[in-house]
Length: 552
Ligand code: FBP
Image 1 (spheres, rainbow, N blue to C red):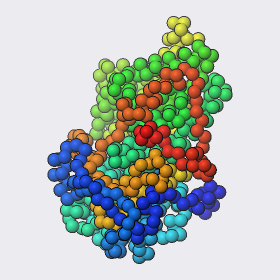
Image 2 (cartoon, rainbow, N blue to C red; image 1 turned 135 degrees about the horizontal axis):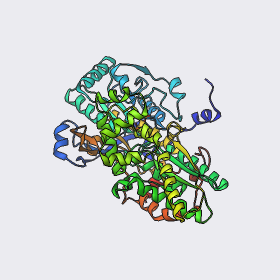
Image 3 (tube, rainbow, N blue to C red; image 1 turned 30 degrees about the vertical axis):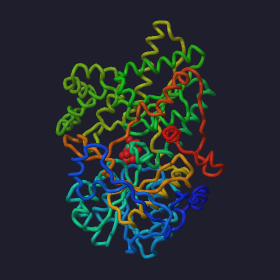
């Protein structure tokens, strides 16, 4: 296989472990903390997890390893969207497992949770693992979005584990996958299978975080990748002085990615979906807000700018979310077939006009035709609009253009408005992990094996104190049930890990809020440049501004 010079060099990188995990496997002992309670709905969660609820938080420290010496056969899966560093979680897991006992075995189940159901796997060895050290992507075993959530699936997984003598499963995934990890752990405990389950917090979206999990892996590299590109675009904008760039960034519902990129690059505009929702901002008021910046900059002779749009924002605009739910209703079940059978867009438009309320039709009617059509693209498996397919960057630039035309007529605006559009998403999910993600992920995997070795079940691998150098990081584990509450999902009450949205009272947003007025009118761009893997620690090992502000 032909590999790049950087890939070759990255194979040689030694990820940094937290200080307490650096003294060799025989020198890691456990300190148990307090028993835990779930963040809310304690009685309900306790009743649903009678075997795994209330366990103690643990930390590792230097000291004699007193764990069991049984042979471990561990299975690992990657679940959901790619996030840089996933390979290193597996490398860390493998290294700790082999350092403990050469006879231990690591199975990689392929293409996500489905691999466990279909018993589709490979067995890792040194040669295979070494090809993936410090690289991006999930191609080491593949990933997938199948969910492990039903009793039937759990019974199949238990059989697969029995067949291979598997003693533990590590699930590398986001909030839903780790919720399912907790349910699987409870099932295994209730059925006395002896199989343990450990989760690792993954997602570029940054929405799997709470008082225990400081950040999910992949967020650091993905936001650094996007920020590099945004910074480059800003510099181009400031050189050419003739375009307004509308840049949509990935991140699903929460705006952590957009906010971090804004803190890194100081664009003229960054929408924050959580604020749009809290202030009940309409499409028109958002367009006015952006147009104000365009107008003020134009008055200073600056007919250029940069606006960051979080991919999920439209769902947070009240009238738009009503429109989306009406459309979901309009296409529910077999009604979608009737709609798709209509030949022309004109016929479809009539169908839509007859099906929507007047209020929603008013919103629909002002959308550009391309966006109208995107709202009728294929639904996700739950029947919902796939918001990441809606070109909201084009939607907002079109609405801003209309506003500016009105202002031109009113004589308040005399500038030029040439918008360009970008979407930053997939290119950030498989980048070579930054030193931070390389170190964090390797530590998460190494630590996950220590949790297995000490017999813990239903725990999330936890590495904390992350804004400090890795030597000061703290390794341990937290029962997943501690992070759960009850939420209404698809018409049912479900125990789930609470998704973290941007907190409008939190320090990262407050910092942004304090500076954005100036950024909107002046040119305060910051150019972060490409991720640096070699060089001084203050350039190569810095973490996100979000984490730094949160831990100030
Ligand atoms: P996870 O939540 O599984 O980590 O995936 C995150 C994400 O990259 C979102 O930011 C994005 O909206 C979505 O996946 C895209 O999904 P897909 O890869 O199926 O197109």
